[in-house]
Image (tube, rainbow, N blue to C red):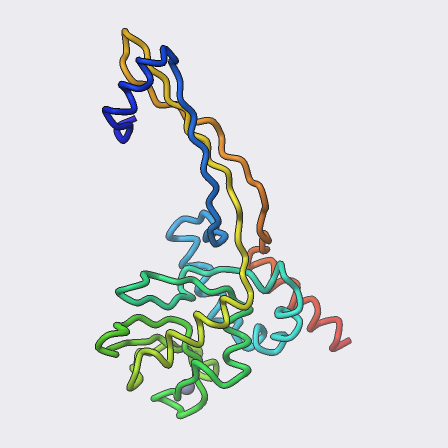
Length: 215
Ligand SMILES: [Zn+2]
């Protein structure tokens, strides 16, 4: 509506048409599931308390797209230039297996796993949050260069894309009584991405698997 230029309006009137439709195709990352802040906090607690189980079944999760592509609000790397970048659970499990995003717990000196980081690619300044599975606690830290946190996550994520391709239609009409009217027709999904299960569902599945293997 508001971005329809004056020239465009003029052209519409000249042609005597009363509507104009615009279509564009966008490709974007599958979005974070729609959850309340309380639900996100609950999910993060579940992630911390079940971290060992997630690690134990890392290969199983990595091999199952509906588990691999689980997104959590707290599993993110962001820079001032690129903004926040969510990476799916499978990407983090792969990185930890390969020895990236690993730190040491200040309390027990055990291996701790970085799951969130932010900083500047220009200055290199950064801070991260890591989880110690032995203490089931998170702590903050930083590394000499932000690139060592930023690039491994970005590159690994690019290897495992989960995109959705959407056709967006915008129809705009003009009437003498009401002036310009905007009207959006529903967007159409041209290519859908993978819809991952909830973390809660995955944990339940892993608990069942562990129980079956023990009996
Ligand atoms: Zn510890």
